[in-house]
Image 1 (cartoon, rainbow, N blue to C red):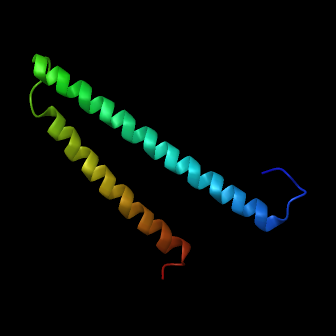
Image 2: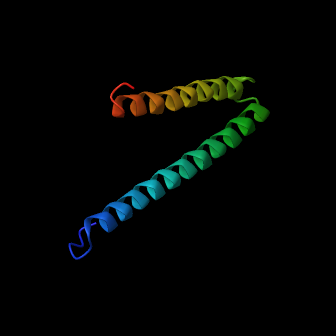
Length: 84
């Protein structure tokens, strides 16, 4: 926030709220895009355009990526706390 009339704490709170909101909106967008891709893959599987089980493979990869993302956040917290 560039409003210099506000005190530092207010600007900091606003910035944190803005950041959190952006993160939530990005997650919602990712979830919607993934659901759209799931739907498209199911339609293609039903038509015989792609092999059955492709969606299961993709879901497995996403589960692994999600687990890696969860653990990277823990690593970041440990690094911020000085390894404690």
